[in-house]
Image (cartoon, rainbow, N blue to C red; front, top):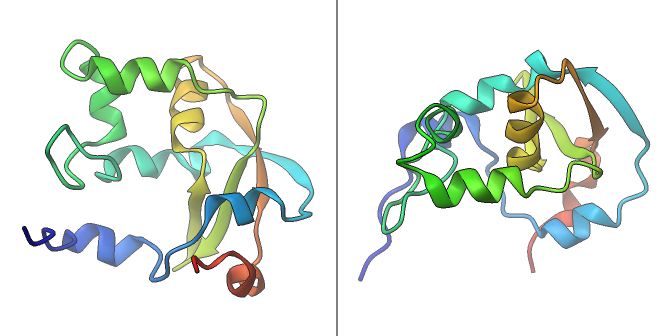
Length: 130
């Protein structure tokens, strides 16, 4: 079975490379606080998938329709927010490499700031998937 085509919005805002999140985690990058509003635009992009779907689940829908998205909501609320969110400046704004579930949980809890690690674009060669 062929993989569905990537949605246009994901092509437009997403990274154009595949990365290994474990390689991101080991980077020596300082942690800092930023306003959560710099990242909440992610909630309106279908970065997740419904069971059997493909990039068709919006984080905002998980939050606003918890009963319809119970598994994803539970996964979100179990996220360990002691880890910072890894972000990279991409196409004019901060894009999450790792931590979307943590971000949504922090937003649900009413946080105004979040801890992040700003991964430099120069680190792409270190984090690309083999």
